[in-house]
Length: 243
Image 1 (cartoon, rainbow, N blue to C red):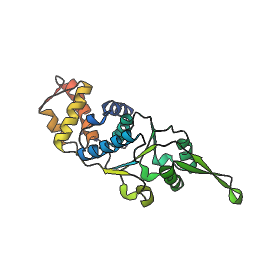
Image 2 (cartoon, rainbow, N blue to C red):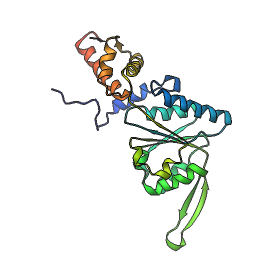
Image 3 (spheres, rainbow, N blue to C red):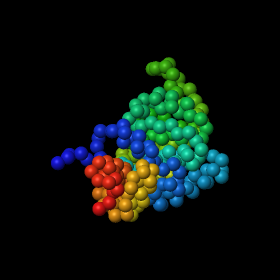
Image 4 (spheres, rainbow, N blue to C red):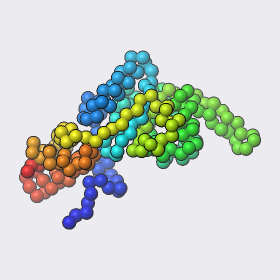
């Protein structure tokens, strides 16, 4: 019996590329999470009408529910560039300062696993989120001086699978927070049929529910299973995914 699992700690580059292909590009294409989508649409539309950067956004929830996709959609809806990094990559305040200083007005900064940002970088993030400014320390010891550096207004989108691990000062600086819920089977079927259309897969009406039922409420798993079942159907059958 095969021991392959639909979710693995090993990242397959081919899977990463396919996941990117299947990502929704705009809010109307995003399936599920109706409450989050509705509230996020209000936040973005309000910012567009005011001509300002929207509030910073915190997305929490289990892996594979669409947090990264929503971050990219936010940038697309704003017509902005997105800069992507992760919490473990921000070990020092200097790492964050370099990234912040390169932002252009209106950019979206996406920090995945934001609960893993090192404390020095997190403390620098407080001022950046509130005042669009960072204090850069030059020198060491008694002779060290702090130089204020203005940065372009931006929107931070943080994603976390462990919202309880965030410090209160960081959490409180997000103007919009949303928790992503597991998907219902009928929502996963919609995800599967959308993905099948993009991939050119012949997914029959009776095939979708079978895959959805085995996807643990997670679109990422559903799409991965769809690709594996597609391989089987093309090699061992006529290519159609059906009972």
